[in-house]
Length: 96
Image (cartoon, rainbow, N blue to C red):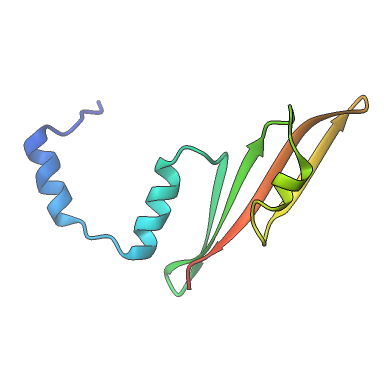
């Protein structure tokens, strides 16, 4: 049976855990709820590089705006019956 910690237990837990800057960034990306997928490559036991995947609305999407979104990215366009139905962007975030 899962139980949520009460306020006292929560405050005790927060003092026990110290996050590194890299771990903080990973947590911030997760909490943003903007990405469909977050992939973490570990290097020497720590996060080394992160890949974030997001879907971009195909409605009213402007190619120039998508391309300018980030200097390093992989963009995938999916067509169905001649219509653009999905745009996915994969962006690497280097932590070193």
